Image (cartoon, rainbow, N blue to C red; front, side):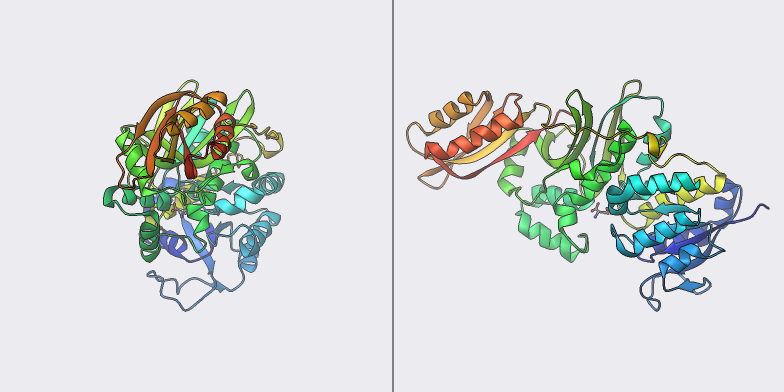
Length: 429
Ligand code: HSE
């Protein structure tokens, strides 16, 4: 039997314990697929005594993940601590400095340091694998780097934060306001320690930036992702979008256009009967479009012990098989500096506002839109209890966001728009 591949697992939270569970549960299956046994040489975490639901007592313990990465009996560092800097970065750097491969679920780390770490790894002849960092159990990194390697990718889209999708679908199905569902998600333990990572779109933005690098052969540029979270979505938006045949999703879109690379993570309307519109609860979906393959849709669990550990093990088994693919699908030194598109491609927009209910109010709003070059496609005014304020919904024809924003700024001078309008992009999916 060939030598085993020996793992050092840094981080024994849900995912780390899940990896240990799979290694213990399926040693023969893994060895058969990998062509050699996969073993755990040592583990490391912040707290030693905790019950993690899996027996780790047989594995040597390291308090310091950097020491774990440097151990002579560790071939691969499995980094499952999380965090864009700190111990995760230090341990990964230590492993790469020793020429060791790294498997990580850490999207924040790679979104911020991916280019430098990939160059370091490839110079050292080491690999960094990160299937578990994007959309949990969905093998999307492998799909892009390998399965679709013969395509020129034209667009990658996805719902890649299960917590946000849970919140938005629960708002719709239970008719509850954002704040109430956010509190529910918190009580269920769905939110990251810093909830802004979820509801601010940051976590999903990290994931999108990694997929964009692979899809378009550009350096990871998380700083260029246009980010907007779901905190401003009101139950009225969900209801009115549904009334017009749409659902609201925190949607990531990356596409290379003549104006440069677009990367957006923002709440968008998508047709309710599209695969993205049908996506319920905490599930993730990634849609990839390539010039030869057309469109493919990948759907599955984006988080949780089993799905994320499943993705980690797929990377581990590839390394054990000797499969070595450049970190972002082509040599890191050849990745281009992306030119960020200054503006998103034209789209139709959903515009919700409250108008003073008096003669000429709608005409004033329509005039401001017209003067900004924004054409109205559909418009509805809803029945309202208040005598003096009317909820109005407008769907525009395709327009540049800049023109719409110009019009929205112009609404202030009409004296008939109450509060701040909500504008959401309607994505062609
Ligand atoms: N918090 C993430 C989500 C999982 O809700 O999808 C980890 O990225």
